[in-house]
Length: 517
Image 1: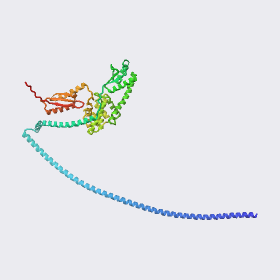
Image 2: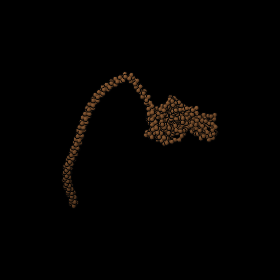
Image 3: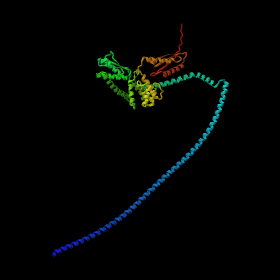
Image 4: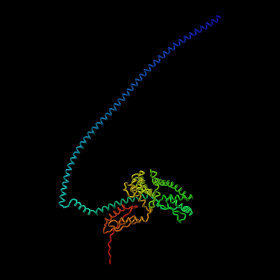
């Protein structure tokens, strides 16, 4: 029992001692931590103070550096301002000097103007005195001579005219011969060069088209029961069908090549199809018309592509293509326009003009012929309206208006187009003309020559390319013959329309005849 109590007491004492020791240990460790914390706080305060000192020093250095940079910049700005001020001062001084110089010059000009005014007044006074003296002398001369001023002038002028007429005529003839030789030489070289550079086949369109048939039985099918098929074809196409004894052939006759072509294609399609009756004829005709429109556009595009021309409105391209189905004296209008464009471009190149513009004017010069059967007016007027509608160049418009001489040519290209038009139309085989028109043109040429005073007879030779004028030798001398040739030329140019050129030859012959008996 005592041992147990003693053991318990020892345990209690051990616990109390352990608690005390632990308390003492905790107390001692707390004091040490506190001291350590105080040391750390102290060290931190020292570090903070150091950092503050370092930051203050760094801030002072940066402020000093910024101040130095600012001072430097201020000095530079002051130097720039000083230089600018010096330049302004120099400029002001130069302006002052210039102003002073202008003032001196203005004073000198004013002084000179005043002197000129005084001199002008003196000259005016002198001039009035001279006029008075001149008038007095004229009056005195009129009294002495017995002639007035106007009468004396008429007398002198008539005498001078009488003496100088032959010399003037001879001088004019020499100058004209020299100019003609030079101009003819250059023009001939240009035209020959142009014609050598461009060559085209000779082709003449006719007013009829022959359609081949597989057999003669097809003629009856084309005519149809009681002629209803042929009447339908003629009614919708506007073309006459001529069915005669010619074996395996039908002739389409029309002055409109477009209608004739549509009728040909329609008839050939009917023959291939085999179903020939009014309804089928109308169906095929409508289809061919649509296809023909595309073909016309293709013709226009092909020509513009070959000529190297661009920027045409689609409607204008179609109008150009329609020229393929128009003719002038048997010459295809589109082929003619293409030739004129090519020749115009070559001539423009020889003369240093705009080749592209010349080609464009040449291509469009006869554009009015494409629709002149649809619209009232000449093809020239219609062509001008079309060109203006599609905003063509003024030179192109003038070339269209002047290529037949209806309007004066305002540009070299307009004259070039007229020359190219005459070349294309007058080349052998290009156009066919009726005998009636041919005889009428020759008669008009001879009539022009016969109306001139002093002309005995006039003969048109070489198919109207030359006019030979025989004058009366007793009324016309050699110099007068040149005047008559020029007068005939001017009358032909002003009154007649003709392709190419006409040579005028005046013949004066004197014969002395005696008869021996």
